[in-house]
Structure formats: C-alpha cells, structure tokens
Image: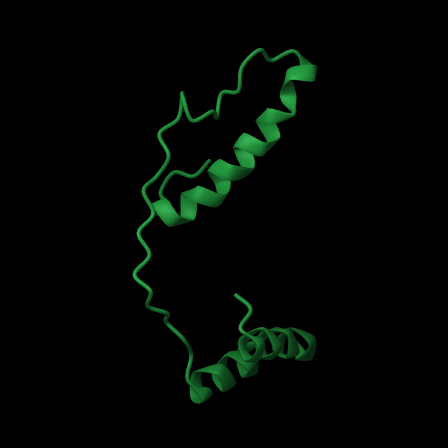
Length: 83
C-alpha cells in the first residue's frame, strides 16, 4: 500500500492500518497484522524546514485551478496555513 513513499509518507498509512486492524478481532482475526511487533515502523526525521509558495507562485496556482471554487480553496488553504 505504501510502496514508493518516504518514511514520512508511509506513517499515516501505517497508523490507519493499525487503527483499522484494531477493530478486526470481532471479525475473526486473532492478531493485528499491522501491529508494532510484526511491522517495522518507518523512522521519520523532521528537518524543521517548510517549502512555501511566494505570492507569484500562489497567484499562478490560483490561475491554473480547474474553476473559481478550486482557486478559492487553494488560496484559503495557503493563507490560513492549512496543508
């Protein structure tokens, strides 16, 4: 499922799989195939650096949006710090 992703990219998939499998015992599984005992967790290193768009790049993104609603969504996300 997470092949080809970085460790940071795989972590959400791994967490989601563990949460889903935690609910499976009632369905007949006796152990969690995504448990920490069976799966090596990826090492995630945070550099603390963020790559952000400048005003010109953000304007270009809005212009390239599919429609006006998508452009507004991109601008709102960028201006409010959403990712």
